[in-house]
Length: 163
Image 1: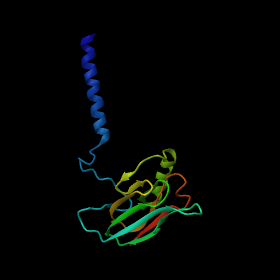
Image 2: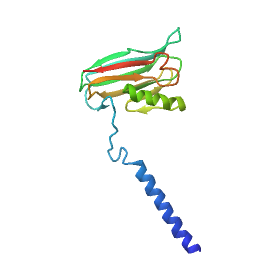
Image 3: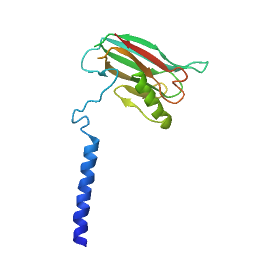
Image 4: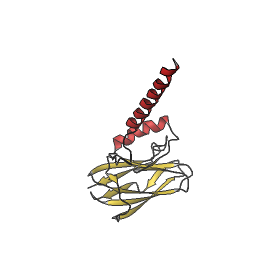
């Protein structure tokens, strides 16, 4: 009996490892490219057409907002968003389609402490800053939003129009 348990245990371990590798997919090392509705991550080695400073903050009348809350961009343009949280609480900047942000908002309601350091989104602590370099390859209207529960409803959303 001992002789059959060891080979069986080894076979099960090998199966588990191969399944985990298959489910993980190629990842960055395999040059897998995630698809984004609003374009693609920019190349930080290439020049940007412009830098857009975005401030996140709360107001005295309990609103939360981005300044600016509307940006117009030319299709194909690579821009750098310089993000700064001037507020008293954590905020995030998620750049995506309105539909994808709505789906992500539901996930955030279930997991409000979810951290973001994605090509299209960053979470910032008060007084924090970060950058996103983005290339807008598709025309359309997109959204940037803070999806931390309650923030979107308090006005923390903005529009990117790509022409």
